[in-house]
Length: 396
Image (cartoon, helix red, strand yellow):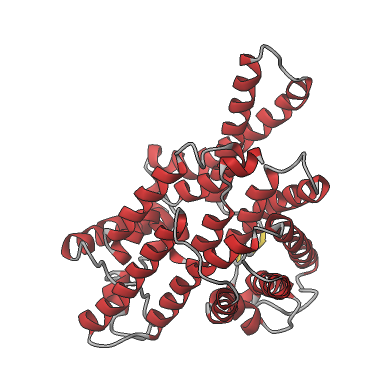
């Protein structure tokens, strides 16, 4: 059992950890620091290890077993890198640092016993999203940032300034908030859900996240109607909001079809650099898997000045494992990560964890099959696994 004082310290550490994931709300007038906080594991890892030191022995069960396996595969990969490449690229240390961050799972599971972790995540996320939205809206109107906390020259201008640094943590907050719209702190969760949705569409502009959101709303909507029809009672709210939701889904689906599916059907994908890269990635990393099925390339990316760059990123140096989801994970870490993914799915689809509260997080994990895998960042693995509710917790 964690003592009260230690729990208070852990709460402060968790808030500090969240702040680091948001680059301290983009309030530090240094692009290098803001980006470094988000893309470097070291500050977060130190906080995770301190949190871990505050808890007593905890029994390793449920997703804890998968966390241990995930970390073991990454340690083995680190050793493989030394053997295979006769040395260690600095990016391998970064990858190992991220992997160790998965141990966040254990202190969060203890922290959840006496603290509302979902409320803290939503609260911090809401503040972050408001600040980020203000920055982006101001830039899109004036061409200037309110605070020079990011390097605009290194970001894409798509439909206005596009920032993707914070996508994962904001999506986690969105999915954990939108399933809590009618309980305690409902107004916080409602506002957070709306602004997070606006962030994904207006700031992130990532089509894959939009696809996952459509999948979420479709499953929730169908499940609700089926549940009500079994009770032979349809809530009036569905009649009022269904047309708006359906219209929104149709508009978004058409947009996604035009940008994602249509190019494959009409052949225009051949001139699309994004499709070209992904198809090349599949071919290149298929050869990698055939050559090293148990270890892949090793968990590193290498510096672009390193001789390893083309070994890891293809003859043109433009291929990345993270672009092709689970398949890329296998190419990077070997078949062991596929075993972990299958075991994760088996547990998620059991009666213990398959419920509406977990739906968004389950969709995020399943979504790793296609692209934007959670398994590139141990912090995400540990946090998502710790946030999954058991059915008995919901009943309580």
